[in-house]
Image (cartoon, rainbow over all chains, first blue to last red; front, side):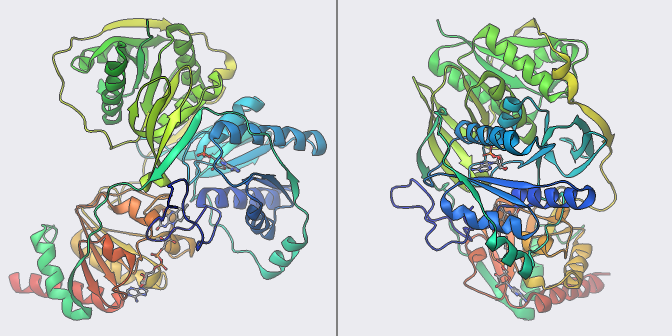
Length: 248
Length: 331
Ligand SMILES: Cc1cc2nc3c(=O)[nH]c(=O)nc-3n(C[C@H](O)[C@H](O)[C@H](O)COP(=O)(O)OP(=O)(O)OC[C@H]3O[C@@H](n4cnc5c(N)ncnc54)[C@H](O)[C@@H]3O)c2cc1C
Ligand SMILES: Nc1ncnc2c1ncn2[C@@H]1O[C@H](COP(=O)(O)O)[C@@H](O)[C@H]1O
């Protein structure tokens, strides 16, 4: 996703974010999903693959994943326009079936809980349904063993709840499940040499069609400067008193 | 004749919870616009649903549907998805509206996957028509998308805390109808197997009246001592930006923002934080924001109401010292 900084800029026709000067990090939930996959395989063996659907530039993020230890990468190449969740899920299902036919079944497929940019909250659930596998969303803890996955997540009213899923299963994860490592320089060099499997997926009709993007009406204010450095302390404490937070 | 509009209602005790009031409000608008009756499916056991029907008076609901199935508890995500999907098939609603919380989106996404229908998550407004024109949130609300939803049954969730809740009107208590559902073992296979109570003890970021947020400018995990001291004096809590959690200076549970917590304290003091939109979505509900930053041009200056320009490691201890001084004078 684009790293938008303090303000989102849109293209003049409002069809997209103006990303000309922006970097594209992997967003937090998905970065954690990649890290979790690497940790599971480090702990108990097996193999890992990473997949993205996006423009050819997304190769770079696939290499980031391989730099921390993912073995194979799959790029479902698009022209870079938005795909709706039905279309995205359909392409991921087709690619998963093809991967499984060629290299054997995946015990576990990890998703992010929601995409940062489009926030559909559904691609993982659609893929799980199509593949006939159980899914739990929002995981902040995951362990795998004895043919099952145990998922821990925050309960809606506070506290934690856990689930057990028979493998093969699908889990969508949230940032905080782990602290992703930084890739090492040798890791990066190795990743640069690796092959990426590419294909051009078919885009099925989804039912959600973007008209235009716009920014929410939010007043851009300009802060009242209370002072510079330590000299501002009395003014700050006056403010604390004024808004009623000084006396506990 | 058009089918009903179906609102998914969750309960807090025996009344609709806050999110469900928003759902009812939006669903009622859609129903009014297309001349359809408004029905509510209560996502709770049937006895609780029956008990809650009186509290649906005044919201325009004609029929409250309750699901009678012994083994089904709110802990079964697929059990509820199967139930809602079956209700959609029997009652043929024009639209189904749920709440865009994590659990609400999870439920309607499962329903959508079962029925092979599109789902629009986190909507702010809806204009029905042959195709529905929607406005929905992207980037956790930092960006809006106007879009078309084209489907035989329109599934959508309401972005939480965006729809003003109306006072009840004179509409009567709905009739209650129990709907039979057939659930398979597979529908009940995924369920909660364990629970842990929340950790109590320190003041949580969600409840604190004052939150002190630290960003990259804090410099290290030790650097947070200055912020902790001020928080202690104000009975507040300390949180931070993603930079500080990614660096391991603070645990992720302290992160404020799009992929962390949404807080709404009386005062948020952002120290050494630049004001990236992904951070701001987590703190913009604060009543007041004070920024402490070395850079007077930082984007946080366009979000904060007040600011101090300077090194936070000088400014924050000076504020703590001034509080102590005043308290000593008073004592
Ligand atoms: C999909 C996605 C989700 C994200 N989710 C989140 C999220 O949930 N929460 C979050 O916070 N971020 C999130 N981010 C990251 C976000 O985009 C920013 O990178 C991050 O918020 C920046 O953190 P910062 O302000 O601490 O650091 P910086 O942007 O580096 O800013 C540091 C600030 O400190 C000031 N400073 C430096 N030294 C001092 C000093 N001694 N005294 C005073 N001021 C000083 C500087 O002037 C600067 O303004 C997300 C990003 C993406 C792409
Ligand atoms: N274009 C894509 N390529 C790969 N994975 C995706 C894509 N879009 C969504 N996903 C996955 O599906 C999850 C949920 O997305 P969404 O339903 O859009 O919120 C994301 O966190 C990703 O793990």
